[in-house]
Amino acid sequence: MRDIASLFGSQYQTIFGGPSPNGAGGSGSGLGGNNSDCCSPLAGGSSTPARRRSVSLGPFRRRIRSEFSLLDYFFHQPKHGRHTRYPNRTFMLMAAGFMFIICGALVHILDPYLLIFKWKLIFQEGSEIFNLWRTPPVDLYIKIYLFNVTNAEDFMNGHAEKMQIEEVGPYVYRELMSHDNITFNDNGTLSTRPHHPLIFQKGLSGKLREDDVFMMPNIALLMYDFDDDFETFFTGESSASVSGLYDTYLGSPDLAQWNGSHCSNIRNASDGTKFVSFIKPDDKLLFFRKSMCRAQILIQNGTDYEVNGLKATKFVFEDNALDNGEFDSRNKCYCRNGNCLPRGLIDVTSCYYGFPIALSYPHFLDADPKVLAHVNGSRPDPKVHRSHFMINPVSGLPLQLSVKFQINMVLEDLSSMAHCEKFSKLVVPALWFEITMPGLPKSLLSRFIFYLKILPFGDQVVKHSLLVLGGILLLVAITKVSLTLSSAYSSAYRISNELRDSLW
Image 1 (spheres, rainbow, N blue to C red):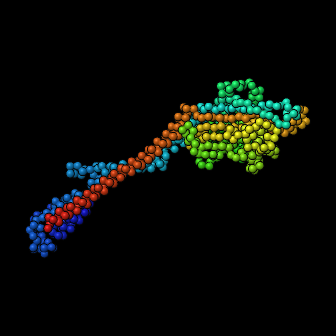
Image 2: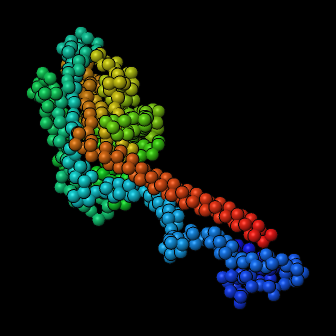
Image 3: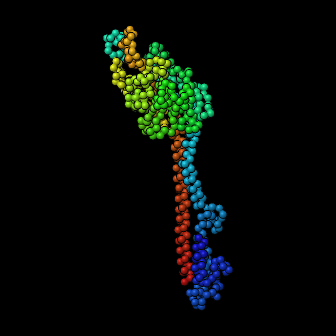
């Protein structure tokens, strides 16, 4: 802006013939009051009026320079008519605005909440997530429903064509799940032996008693004999999203009972304690329990759910999961020794110590109708007998789950055995069970609400606040500069008019 002042000075210098602002005549007085010997182009060098010759441009030039020192005004704080060497408020506002915007952009790009959350997901000795996985403080229940044959004598004597079954239960047990004898390995995994003791819940079983059923101890032994199990899980060291998922079972990522990776693979499956984190739309999950003798594929069945204040994605077993190749040729590997059971039944004899057992959904839900040819009393209901999982898509935390399967006795040809020929080649339902977790305990729920709901909200508030505040400060600074420019141009115009009036 000093150039503008110089321009004004140069312009009027040519009119009055005085020294330039930077010339030998001095910079303070312009033409000065004693310029009678100067030549004026306008006056022809001899006839300049005295009033014009006596005009001094010094005060006007100083005013022009003062009004147009915009850079000084912007970068230095005026005080007592002088410019000090520290930034003024406008500059500080603009600097603060840029700083807040840069900080907001860094928060958006780096996402410190996500970085910290991923670090929290990694299993380390003494870490919070590891302690929760080692001994989950949740209420996990096993509900067992037995099938009682009410016309056994008539059926065996040939007086009844079909067995009449009646559901009895539930017998409710609480599962105290834990992972014991943990060893951290160098390859980003840990080794452990699972422990699943069952405690009978008399209060939840109504009038039923544990000793009502002679079959109960044997079934419990078959389903929950984990003494020789040896498992390895990912710690999340290489990828935080897979922490707590299976790496191997009994030393292998494949179950020995099945041929082909489609049927045998359990790697990246969950035992129900924690699923994969950061679930994306259309992602499929794996769920494995020893009692199922396989890893079940889970597909999404809705994302707009909320369980006790936390966002949840609903997962169910994929369609035709218990198909033996009738609809999905990949499932032929579930046929043992080339013998395929009807649709809806999976032969798990190898997992149950040679007992002729097949898994199905409760009450033969989705099974081939011919399975029910010799059974009355089976009432499959998708609303009651369908399994589901409610999983938080960010953490992989199960918020609610209900897993339901039925154990059946698959009898072979018994025609050579007296009084047993009626049971030849029959599928006799023994029981169905539900593994259920109705919800998280309040202490754990409040903790995860803070982690998964409050902290992300705070992160967004901080990010947007920084951007908005930075924008406001920049807007204020720009407004002040605009007003200063407007004032400067107005002053210049006013001074120009005053100078013109003084000269003429």
